[in-house]
Length: 233
Image 1 (cartoon, rainbow, N blue to C red):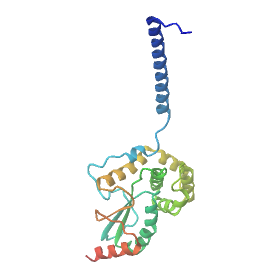
Image 2 (image 1 turned 120 degrees about the vertical axis):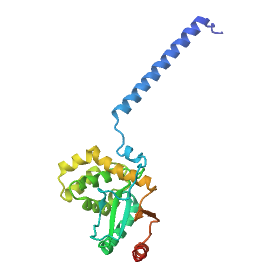
Image 3 (image 1 turned 90 degrees about the vertical axis):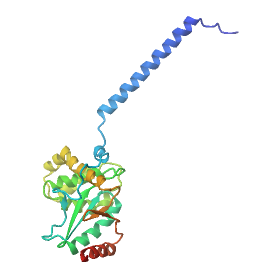
């Protein structure tokens, strides 16, 4: 037995009801999305990682972190680094060895360049900068690299682990927490990254020698030979 056909007016009313229901559903989804964006904090470091190159970039600035400060510097070696980068972790003992050998002749400078894809790279940079505000940059720099294999490549935040490092090196924890959350600390990291982008840095580690970007030496012997040649010239 065939079903009775709907009249044109009934079909129009059914279509109107369907359109209204669809509109309500879309509005509800939009409201839910809006609430999610409003109340979900942005991932730490998004602004830093999306930084634009600096208009006037400098390899070294007045507030850059100098690991050595010879009375008469014959050369400046700048490393743009990410504390979570395995390549930077591999370069760290090489740089430490070179610092001991050339520290009275060469200025070694560490600058921040956290890379996308590292969950704790930007956080680690802010941790180092918060330590620097208490005059302890080098201690935190070493702590982060010495323990990189313990926290690097993690999917979760390692802020509590880093607070443990702050406690270990004797920082005022209340001040450390405040400095870590201070937007000015993130801006300081951002400034380094912007300089790096303008200077052609695209990955880490990237070394500049007297302002000139060089291919990263793979071994201590290669880096030493490079420095000796430059210093002799």
